[in-house]
Image (cartoon, rainbow, N blue to C red):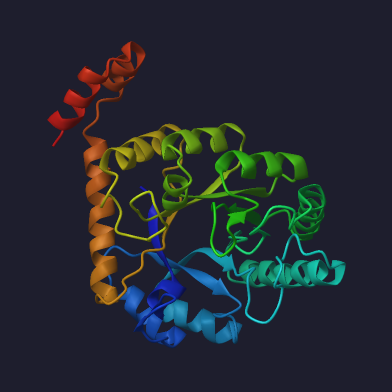
Length: 318
């Protein structure tokens, strides 16, 4: 069974372009909140926000008995890297990204964590002819290769997303991202599969997981849900019950069953602890439904490919 973690930034401020729902909280408060939620095993730390004092961070994690699923390297920052980080046209800016990513890798290693995840949301374009895609892929490949070489024991995971804040992010789908990883060729470069981002990209999450795993690049998984129109960071299974069950079923077939799930679920105006308690319970409920599937029977049904039989079988599980 996979362990469960919350991205620390989702325990703090909750806002959008129009409203502030909840104010920022100190890291100590965030970790105390996480430890109070039954079923939560750890956190995904935000870099650099959570790393002002590494020794104090170690103490807080130990005090609250929290593990570390990953370190989330924020590659979009206010006041810098305006036109992308890994694809920045400026060689100096790309070197800044590499240097800071190396520092994040060193900090993660000191904490005993061997996974960095990053979502290059600002790497992309808004308009046609705004970006030289050929140069952008070359620059990104060089940047990621340099970071990966710093410590081969640390896995770097690219979390893809179709858009936001760019109209089109350069790593928008599972296929684009895994192809890029193969282009770079570093064994420690892979993908974070955020199920909400896969749904928003029009993918079948189970199919995306299979593709990434077959390429040896399925490194990490984020859980949430949305309506397919936007990345709303909603409760797991709120909109896509059977896609979720198929996803979990496929992850088990791929042996992603002794690792971590990271949560990015937005509480908005609802109590944050209550929201993540519901998130945990829904995850385990979805897993329980998945447990009811007889693998031998399901393989038979998929071999025949009769949707009438498959859907009847699935609803018989409830």
